[in-house]
Length: 537
Ligand code: ADP
Image: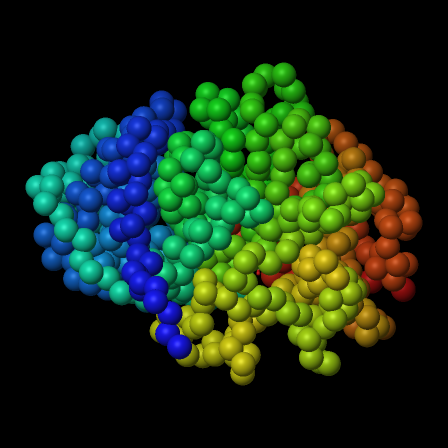
């Protein structure tokens, strides 16, 4: 029997209209390149997003045309997030931290027709312009400097709109935006989100047990808008109607803490590297900033338990989440289930440090050679996921079909255990697991334990080929400024915490761990550095 319910399409114009109608006075603040704060309201944002939509249509943008952005987290970028898709275009955010060759490859692969670029990033545009074929380049004048000849100023472009924009009727499966994975594990692969997938993702991520966003919040997405749509926060934030404070190009600890203080931020989100820096600044000057109790979502790489504990002492709550470009990105969030409240505090910290329970509509399973692993918190398997905001293919890339199982689940490449309570814990990426004498060792567990040592700032553990055991772990260690620790001390520190065969055979002190453009350890490079490591017998 069919239902009697309406089928209104889940499209972004609903969110934009709602924001303009219901929250015209909500503020959007942007830290500009000169550190000043630019302020306007949702009413301005609504008008300008629609002006961008109209201007793009007038400039000849056709449904499905890709419009790329090369931009920091700013109000203008937010306008692009809405203005492009509501006009039927596809928002393609470019990761400005990639090598220019990769950026050019991605632009060409996506066949971008328009490009919106921040004036402070024009140098980067200069480096790629001869290798791409973009019809129109629009420059956002963040600094107030004149726009170079031949390029269009964003303000002039908006001025071509007359205010009579009408939303085209879009089917909910229409492409809304696209992102390329950051390439930690190979060539960038494009994922295309739909209006429907992003609306459902926004509804899911606003939930109290997910990112917990409401109209009274003040939200600072530190995660760049050029990385997995800033975890969907621009859409979720505008959907709920909250004030948004954007960091612009200033992602250092002091600027962020200043922003949290001056704008009274209550929710923020970023990768562990950023939160490590902020924590150090707070520990150095604990009374300098007056910050409200704030929730800090962390994801993109594992958050060490020691960091979660340290933030608690400042009344700042780290909420660990896991996701992927292919998942829009949210998959799991770690909050304490009500039946576990009051359990052993150490156990609860361990739970907060794992990746969390699946969001509504996201299904998870851990697959190994015996099939789906039991939810026992011990049996490892590759995490596979399914859900309405999970990709079912890559853009123009048939060769990657084996990333999906025969029954349609997405293979994440993350190795996990799932507990009886449903908490997913990542032990490694399939490529990073260490196999010693036929037994698996989790590099992530070792890293998190080592980063709990008072002298250790960062630790990355990799597999190095071993004549007897196949592979053995090697730990690359960065010490905190002025701190000392010997190999024997680190070994003794691990001994009571892990099985004997897990303890790395080598500890190497280094100045820094190589990182990807999104702040993850670049283990490929580390493995290469230590590939000829000579084990002492
Ligand atoms: P890339 O493959 O280019 O790094 P993504 O940026 O989409 O692409 O990263 C997704 C991956 O990041 C996940 O598969 C996982 O390995 C890692 N990741 C994301 N969040 C977490 C987390 N909270 N803990 C551990 N790893 C994480």
